[in-house]
Length: 29
Image (cartoon, rainbow, N blue to C red; front, top):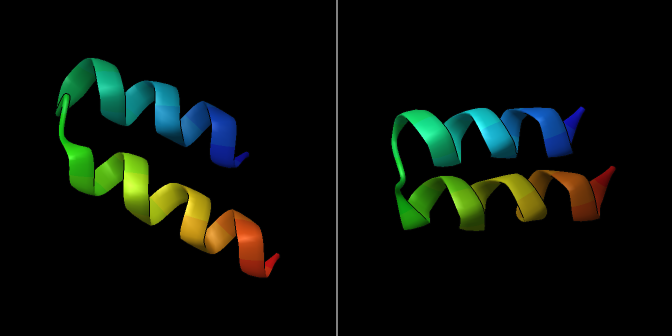
């Protein structure tokens, strides 16, 4: 799930925050 969200965020926002936030949640899970 994290991967899908990360791809969407990269395509829509292209923001570094999304790239950092996604791995953080994935790491905990």
